[in-house]
Image (tube, rainbow, N blue to C red; front, top):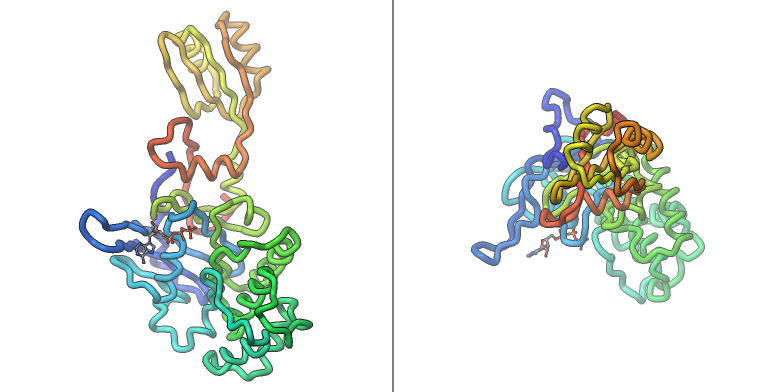
Length: 337
Ligand SMILES: Nc1ncnc2c1ncn2[C@@H]1O[C@H](COP(=O)(O)OP(=O)(O)OP(=O)(O)O)[C@@H](O)[C@H]1O
């Protein structure tokens, strides 16, 4: 089972500009028997210059966490900061963090440019910035069109343009790929990667790992309000190693065989006198030959690939679910260890 909590951030390292920090964050909605523990002692960091996927099934607590980062919901306990300060202490917040939460609502009769010009004075930027951000998101040619006629993909781009008005170093985007067609997703991928390459902090939530797999450098995975895994994507991918299922009606003989080898055991099931092992990093030919040589009767010898999406489902499955659980380390520093 995965370590339920990330290692605490290193308190000796001063907060970098653009560092997003969540520490022991907890949110309980309501009280008594009907209370909902939406976020439960969550701790993680999101680093500049990287795209981080904030992942979890529906209802895991992603939006509530983002809302607390933005000062829209008060935590029950714990804290959040952006560049070392809580949201409420940011002098000009739109110049520090741009956020797009849920489907933004637009006045259908307004043009894209006018929509942005409504926000420009609030952010403290000149009207001309509206055209700049429209160009950035590829909507320059649609600047004078009414938003009511926009496709979902165009609306998502306009929402993104709105978050960029203040040229913030930090972007918090809640399910930005929702409703996009493959072309739109490919565009978003390139766009987010370019923003991170400029040194920005980009946090993107999604309930589907495969949707962001090609976009993110790091992952923070939560389920039922709790952290279940935080690491770089390559480190997560290393957990998705192929498994070999080997079963024998003679459990003690298989135990002795496995114990005598340097095979890595992920999981073992026992029933009657038999045993079934899930082994990592060993192939069927090796195990089959060793069993044959030792005279161990095998009733199953089957390889199984565990894809990233399978791993994600395993990591976020309710605790009642049976079956092998991957062993995961949890880090928060974004390194590829
Ligand atoms: N204002 C609220 N009052 C009561 N419960 C709430 C409130 N907001 C969220 N919740 C509950 O908190 C839990 C977490 O919800 P949240 O929207 O943060 O999850 P999520 O991971 O963003 O899910 P999704 O992917 O479906 O958006 C859910 O059980 C939700 O019903």
